[in-house]
Image (cartoon, rainbow, N blue to C red; front, side, top):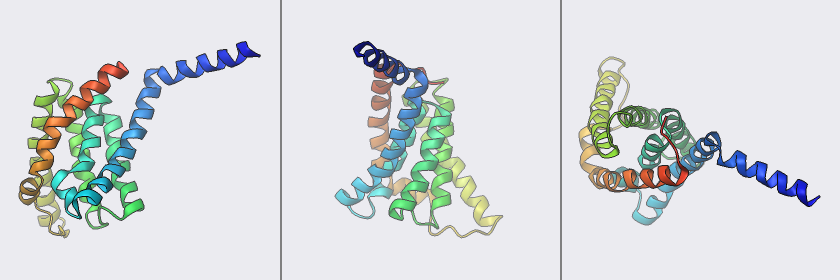
Length: 187
């Protein structure tokens, strides 16, 4: 009886330590962080904290550096959608724009991280991501005649500067620690 319990425990440990399990569990946890972190910032720093500190971006960027494109895209989508469903934020009007923005960052950072170190990848993602996002906004406004609900890339950069600095300082360090501790190769 004791042997069977020990054997089951060993099997469970093997399953949980597999790379696939690490990716699945990590993706789920980062999705939860992507939902929870904005709430924490809003409680601690007020209603504009999301625009200033960009907390939802943090989980997506960590996922991109740690797990890659699939995981970070899942974190981006689930964070935005479940955050809206659970908290009403971002607003329904801003939800598609936020989703597109986070997906751009997820894809770009995952791709850049395969060729460059995490800092260069993150800087390139922040710059190119905003350029692509500006293009999508311009297309949405000028071609599709969609309302922008006051979204401006230039204003979001100015307002979100503390968040960008926070990302540049924290995200590569957190991702490096996770990669080392989990013994992952970002695929």
